[in-house]
Image 1: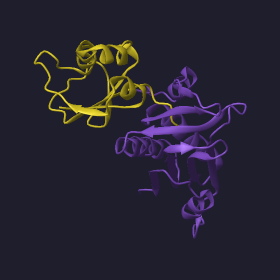
Image 2: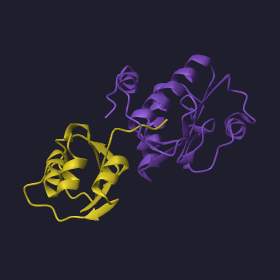
Image 3: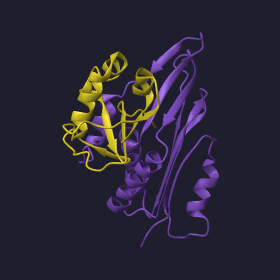
Amino acid sequence: MKIRYFAWVRERVGKPEEEIALPAEVTTAGELVRWLKTRGEEYDYAFERPEVIRVAIDQMHVTADTPLGDAREVALFPPMTGG
Amino acid sequence: MAIPITVRVQAEPFDTAAETAKLTAGRTDVGAVVTFEGLCRSEDGTLAALELEHYPGMAEAEIARVAEEASRRWPVLGLAAIHRYGKIAPGAPIVLVIATSPHRRAAFEAAEFLMDFLKTRAPFWKKEHRRDGTEGGWVDAREADDAAAARWGVTSG
């Protein structure tokens, strides 16, 4: 699964995107954020406040309980500040 | 009938007069044009530039979804929403929203709705660059923006 990071999430993780094979128990957007947090110091820093992280599955906003299903691309980012 | 909806995400400045003309030229049914431009503030002279990051593809799609929702809610005759990315200097434009309708209220409300939802749903992030050379960091999302979006009766996501 392609995972993309934006803004300070991208800076803290240290890369804009990566391909990740998810463990079978990671099935929702919220579980993905909590699992990523365990992958190392930089991930722990990026996801230190999992509740503020927004998730988009195949470029659509989703909530924490949304199943990842057969998503091609999951993006994680801070709350938006455009406009 | 589908109305003309222009959605663009671009690095270049936009031409407000040209975009307005596209929605009004040759038409006699438009009675109201509301144009909103958002500009980069200097933050009391401390800001050198704002750097706008976006999620290519999703940014356009999300603004288009917001514009389509506005066209369902109000009797608008045309909508345009253009958002820039990249480094933007104080005083320079960041975002343009135009709504046209037969009467002013629908145009005002549709334009405001577009801005409220664009701010809280479109994937853009602002990073400050300070004049003293330091990084100003990422601009925090404002709860006031979420509240502004929420008053339209849809969650901001």
